[in-house]
Length: 485
Image (cartoon, rainbow, N blue to C red; front, side, top):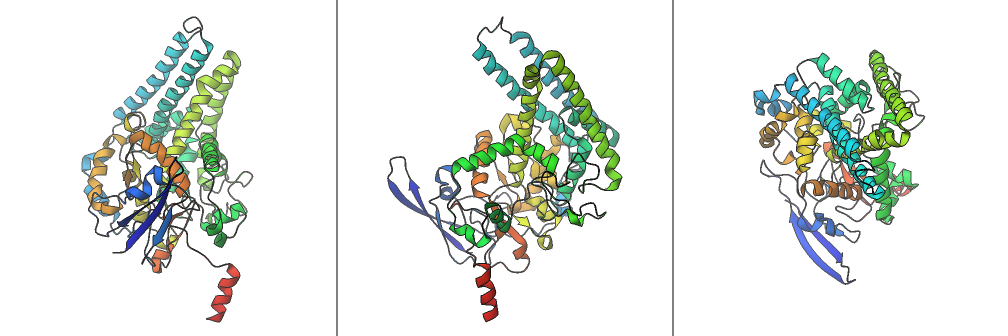
């Protein structure tokens, strides 16, 4: 067992500088219900400041997550996971799925009718009050719209019902209504599930390596340890941009997906890259995200978007563009916000590893996800997509209404590798966005790692939070050192 001594300095609002010390130790013999945990001194948001100072002793060769917890590679099998799940959890009901779709559509329709009927100048003369109430309308509709999005997501995984025809019909209609290219997303999302955590094949929220992060800032990788911390306002600005346009950017330019398209088996990826103008889009049948056999499905997805866009144009033309913005566009942006936030936090956390291909397998990749808690909204309006994501990555055909039971069944098999962060409920979920944005800036191997451990990478940052990044020699010095050996 290796000990990690943590030294921290806290700056209080009085300007007084105090010091505190604590020690944390990790054990490889965690109980089945354990999750890699943060020590109280090193993970409370009040203590996550740039003055943190970690002194690591006797850890060379160990795998350490960002908090300093020792990590062991998962050694269980997919068969063990599936065998642990009760058989009835795999049962899907088309009638139950349609009932949930009807519930969500009815909620959207009822909310619109109530606000449109009663929130009028005659009933609410105050313009500011009406504005606040209409803003509340957009938020509520965003919640119901996200729920409908999740049900279409169930359709894409064939967990909605035993019928593929019903699944794809309902999924195409619901996602098209939300301006999501259903089949295009379904195909790329399936590839994400097949390669979760694989740095060269994963399709969503693939983190930057140390070299990529440094290059974007105009520095070399070895210079990152010398940089000042990222200012909180820059972090906040990045988060706002991600939440506003992240989903559209992903669909249009595959941002956050892998950028190894030259390996596409049909040669479609030659000369193509992520980013606008790079030829990697969810709307293009010739995109390297797809094979030639998928072209008709991509076109059908685009047709669904065109139908919805036409309806929206007619509504705006007849009832006014300002009304359309309140009735549809603002709720649509809320849906996009929740989608990005949920996906980001499912795959971005200081405890999560990412893998080079030589160290990756499906069981390890599926374990590189985390469950969180969002209370009533998460469990009932969002259909549990936040609370049972780990199970979903192992068996994506289990319907959401059986996922809680199945999650409990796989915890003993996963042991210390099951991860969850449920502290604080919905507030904790939102805090985790800031925590991850500050702590998870790039990934790098752990110092002294050997063998397949060299292909296991963890998040590091330049904000002085958690385990510090490795100190690297400049490339010239490294070459000279090798020549002298």
